[in-house]
Length: 595
Ligand code: M6R
Image (cartoon, rainbow, N blue to C red; front, side):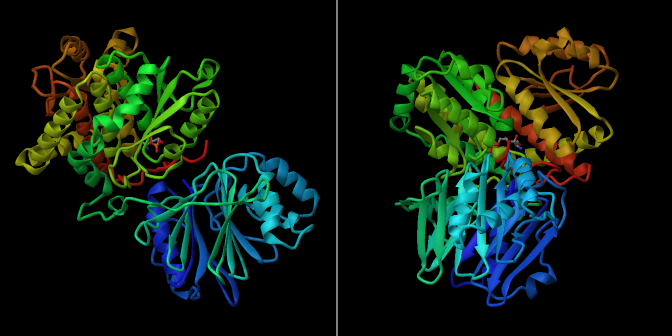
């Protein structure tokens, strides 16, 4: 969702900001804007659509300080006027925001009674007018921002550039904000990836912390916005291998990231038994273990809970982070939550963790984005180390997270090395698969399936046991990129209602592992087949019941891991067949930082 990028330093701020905004593109946006301060005041450019090499960019003045924003519309349509940054009425400052001002209507009504005029439909403009209102009783912009910020409800992060071009301010609450430091330069942004090509020195901000940066003496100060006290801060270093966002000759990030899984599943299990020790001890001591996440990460949380129950025989409950209502009552200080997230910034998940933390629950997390909020609020932090995942639809983060969950479950029963060996074995199989002619053969199959599926609207995916969450995630993956109705079910659910939907030629994808549920799955396939379904089987063995067979790699321990990959490929090829954009599906944002 919205991205913020501010820069002050010796370089041409316009180019640095545009480059930074491009590195934030993956979060999802529908419009964008840049504001640059120079001796002639602030120049703003705002556009709907993708950041391109517009002529207007050339016309922007040379400047050493500016702010930029990518907007994912929440309040007010997608338009130039609603895009950020927003000017104050007297053009003395501009503001960009990430988040939602939950009390914006109430504030707007009060501000209207005080004669403030509104020209946009955004909640952001309320912040601008509120700062103007506060400036009536102080001529100090810093104080006015502080006073205005504490009146806002909701998760909001803002950045403010005054016309003087001598300072820049930013305040964080909920929505992410990090600072990058280099010699004579500062970057203020929504994530470290956006400036990771300039510096690896970062400062992480906590909620209600405010940055004031003065260009004259390159002075950075951080304050607590509630009491105005100065805060001492520390620099950290980010891992530089995690900042490369080159597409490396692929047509889309999605296919690049699907191929990368042969490596990323290995990276995710680079934790020794010593490094897992504290978490293992916490799990063993805890009263109850929960896993939590949303969307794909929610399905990964479900799969991790499955491994912990099935392999380690631990009583684990999977929760959806946006739906923990009844659990609020029973969380206690002997519980442990394992949070799963790619971005580490998902508002629903952060809120669930905050609620649990207040009840004394210990937090562990497996997150892909280093330095993110979820990592920083966790007692036990683990990184999935998949590298930047740019495609909005999550692929490599999912398989990395479940590989880590498998490692954890196996380590709990003394089989750490077996888990690592198995993930390495699968990684090798995937490497051979993607490299060999076999893949090109199956690429044909995927393209064929895409052609067959292009004219259909409703599809069903069946799995059971270790493949239940794979069916749900497989269906979500295809929905996201193809906009078609794919629904995942447990094969056990079929006779209890779902079978009513099956008619002649209804496409059904069945995931069949060589495990205790193989016979159940084949019976389910026979039942849909008897009603005319067109069956695609994902399995390590062909079967006469399948109309189309997609072979998948076999693993005795973690077969489910390899079963998701065909869904990612169907999603990709069907999306392309339909003319959709695989990397930027409609309406979706990569990092869902608002509720
Ligand atoms: O960053 P997170 O993993 O916490 O994000 C959670 C979901 O928003 C995310 O998994 C979403 O469902 C993806 N678009 C799935 O492809």
